[in-house]
Image: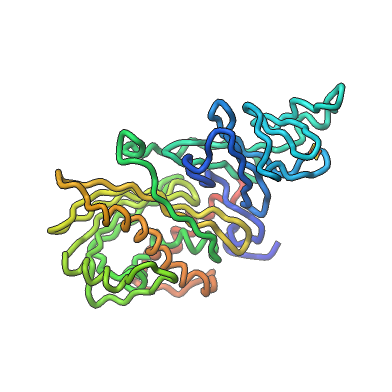
Length: 346
Ligand code: FES
Ligand SMILES: [Fe+2]
């Protein structure tokens, strides 16, 4: 072990907690997909009953990948495409079609991962120590067909460190420089498994901005428009655990008054990359329906805002002992809070 201030800097360690892997709409009944997270290969499938299961990808028999050739779902079990061994959602080997008896060793040889499906997303519980999952992911009441609809989301595999992504939540000083805008109010609150940012941001004409790559429209023009509308946004962004952030925001201007919920997450793929995703539902705060154009564009702006950070994350190094000034947010406090997810559970 190298000496580091924080456990999260140990190579190969990934945070204990819930990590989103898919949205519910991405996995229909009978569908099997492969996933690569935490330097491991996994398969996810939705059985006939609608239940979702995540298993290690490689068959304990002779090592075939359970999602090869599209996978072989049967009811609530999955069969290996190589010799047909069959596993249930807990990874238990329930049938070997050509054997009289299932070898004792095979019964529990395949690891299953705790899974939760709520708010239209599917998350798995990662814990190298094997502690039982914790119940800390709140409901998002307006999500769903009877509410504000289903998520519009965009996911990218990017080069970034989870510790850099999470630091955004307290980094008040980067707003103007990276995202453009004037921070009118800013406060962080820390809970046992949560960290919250309450902020009001006013669009500002003279702010500098980092340009996200491959933006499908002109961010400068968008900014200018927002400044003209004098739109300001109030928001509550809260991380629930190490990688899932819920963000509720209200934005008011002469032309447009809306509220939105975002789910932003980063799930580590390996020591170099994370899957970064932002998902949005949005509703009008008045009787006026939101223009279609806005409904289509708004979810993209969420992802583009992250795209601005991505440009910085990709090239930065990590300062374990940063030199901070009085205008910075509580960066060291955040780091101590974040480290809990890498420390053995007390
Ligand atoms: S490798 Fe999976 S059944 Fe043989
Ligand atoms: Fe940011």
